[in-house]
Structures are given as C-alpha cells and as structure tokens.
Length: 423
Image 1: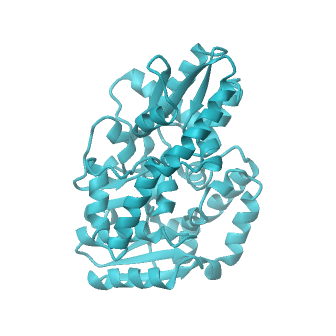
Image 2: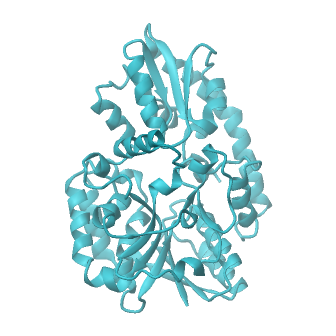
Image 3: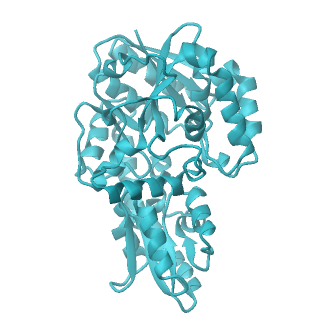
C-alpha cells in the first residue's frame, strides 16, 4: 500500500478542487493500491468530503480524513504562538504547518509517507516515487537548482545570487543555494524523523520562529535537512513556471508543479491544458463552474480593468518628475502595459525565472534617482526587504504595485493566487 498526504485549509470551500484534481491525476496514473490521507480542519465541508470519497470509490482507492484541530490541537497552537508575531505568517495557509506533523501522526503505523502540495499534477505512476530507497536519509526532495536550466557558469552564478536574494537561509550562509530544495513533493522516512530527527525538527521550528527574518515551512525543512537529504531527479517536482520560461513544455512521466504564477486560463499552454484535462474529470468540474470561470475571467478584463485603470493613474501620480519603469511576471506584461498605458520608450523588465530578480536589482541601480519602478510580484515581504537592504526606498525608488492594486482596486490579474479564490 502506498501512502500519500495532502494538507487542506479551505476557508472559502474553493480550494478542494485543486486537491481533488491532484488526487485524481495520481489515481489515473497509478495501478497500485493507494491510501490518501487528507490533513484538514473545520473548513472541509461535507460536500467536498463526499466528493473526495466518491473520487476514491471511482478508482477503488482509499481516502482517510484527519482533523488536525482535534488530533494535534496543542501542536498547532504552539506553532501559531511561535509565528504569530511574524508578518509573513499571515501570508501562509495553516495547512503549510500540517506537513511538519506527519511523522508524529503516522510513524507508529507507517515507515514512510509521500507528501504532496495541491497545486500539482501527478502525471506519472506515484509508485516510482514510493519505491525509491531512502536508506539513511530522513527525506527525499528535488533541489531548486534542478528546476532552473543551467547552461553556463554565468547562469549558475545568477542562480546562486537569486537564491541568496530570495531565501535568507541562503543569504546568511546557513544553506548552500545548490542544496536548497522545494518541499512541495517529499518522500519522508517516518521512523527516522520521529526518532532521530524529532527534536532536530522542533529546534528548527523554534529557530525560525525566533528569527523572523526567515521564512516558513519550506525554510524549516531546509534549515533541518538541506545538508542531509536524498536529492531526487527533477521529474518528481517539475516546475511549470521555470520550464515554461525557457520553452520546455515537458509533461510526460513527471509531477508538474504549478508554483507561483504557474497556472492561468491560457489553454494553448501545454501545462495549463494538462491541469484542465484532469480537472474536467472531477466532480468539481461542471457547467456552473465552467461558466463562473469564464465570467470571472471576462470580469477581470472589463469591470475590474476599468477600475484598475483609474487606480493606475492615481499610482502614476506618485512619479513626481521621474520616469516610470515596470517589472512583472512575463505572463502579465501585455495586461499591465494596457492597464498603465506603458509607452514604448518606458522600460519594462519581464520576470521570467529565478534569475530575473538579480537583473531587476541591476536595472534599478543603473536608473537610481531617475526612475521609479512599478513592481508586480507575489504579495509577500521578501523582495521588498531585499530592495530595502540595498538602499532602495519604497514609494521613492519603487512602488509595490501588486499590493496597492489588490488592496484598493481588486484587479485580479496581477495577484498570483487571486484567480483561485474567484473560481
């Protein structure tokens, strides 16, 4: 029996469709017996619970539900107490903490466990991951460097610089950028984690909670295990965003992970088409959902755009004698150019991969004092902190356009995850 865990926090009842789609893709490609363990809280509705059960029955597989608020109430409260003073804590779902408790919950019954994020498609037989021999390693994961095509020493330097800017554990030398891994796909050695590494993992949680400049669950795992994990081939955690940027639309026999701006409504994109090909087989897909998706997308191009244009004009009034410059994920460039009436003679730096942030910093340095940059990046604090650290001043050298538009005009197209909440 293969055992796979998903964490689920579903405040609006709309995220279960992503977990369900990931599970269906795994069942569709796996003939071996699988038990899916859904780690959830009170936000799991009865309707969604029944859909999960129906999905398991259809494939003659098994799903078990674990109410984390009842099973691990004290642990979860301790986590919340640890991180409540961190501004980054509010950016993360409580389900991000559940994977930390997997060894405690399951080690008495199972020797190992696969953990999967919900924003992925298992387009392979999950048995391929399950049968990997962990030997004496506590976990197995895919290093971030495997998701970034490296073709030259210069590219490697860009990658390492970007990792140091994005992840403070790398910046402070606590984790080598080449060892840093993504924790969205994990093969976990439960016996080893619950015995030898239980205290080590707890110390990692406390360390990061006491040093609020660091990140969240992924940085906890990296703090504890980056020097001692089994590195998996990239096929087991294949980032759609990075590979789309270099035109590598590979989907066969791999776990495709839609990290960050990894998914959109563009069905001409093979990665998007792959996700929808599985989604349409779930109970969550029906004509009402399809119509709502279409209407949501239409609205984002009409009513919200009109409102956004007005606010864009207000934002540009902050330029005060300087020239404007823009930077945004590549898939939003055309939309933002239209929204902000970007002229041909104004700089626009597309963010296409992990190297882009270093390029942005270089471009800003060259135009320091002459231009104000409108930056559209996912709404978290890391990139602002990095720019501030190298002496760029918010609302003078750059404007966090994403946060401004989300909070005041609700233009969904520039919000990394807003479209998910609207489905």
